[in-house]
Length: 369
Image (cartoon, rainbow, N blue to C red):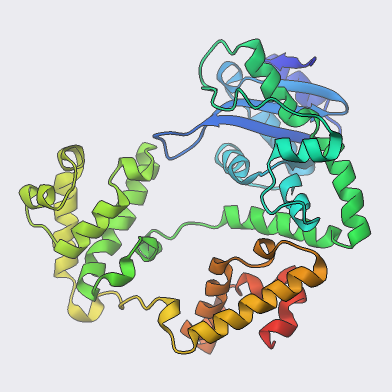
């Protein structure tokens, strides 16, 4: 497969100058093992029938390219982590971002259909995925690795042209584009460090005092991971945060006794003990409220079953995957909004997915709205 390899700033500038407003088909290869942020190893581009591999390690500053996306439509497959990379490098997600995996879902080809499976279904081409575990930060990259990488964009526009035609015929084009934008906006949402304790597994089993300890621990872990570019569990494992909050250790020996690792204690022990002390000093009145899981509310089983049946009915009526309309988490978010918020709170927060956009249009009669 013929492609142009971009490995210098002048070559990147020349490429950017030649880009038209036609669709850009894009993909990224990255490495993320022990880091908070993904490390970009390669950027693939297809445009006007030509193919490019951009080496970020050699080029350095890719901002001239990222800025091109602001005024263009870019096409990706399963773009969740790609959007994160763009956001981290570019600083925003202006422009239009389309995802062929989302298009496949609206055509009921599979809720999370992989790129190779899509290409085979739509073009008959069978792709070799043998280089999927490549270390994309290693140099030099071998010809087989480069060939694998470029094929991730070679068939993207060809597939999208078929998908777009089928979406139009099904009357789903507007819904598809709306969902792509929903996913972009979700990626733009800011993390609230003080609310992270709510997402710690089994946090609902802790009492209010333990939650007063868990809350600053979860916030500190996230901010440390972000500042030092460590994966969250390479700061302190999530399960260890829970144990610390439950047992409120007052010494490094007590930390060790509840399973906190030697490395976690050596690097972060003093900070952890300080945060435990801080949580213990919070007045009883100011401790976080006990977490009540949505499935413990009266009438949960009946209402969840009703909503699940409604989702299944809508999925059958519109020939969509059930998971695209609403997962269990989506239904729980709706019920939490319905049961846990006052009318005033509801007016000040965004509506849940089932009450917004295309999902509400399909589900309104099932929600009783």
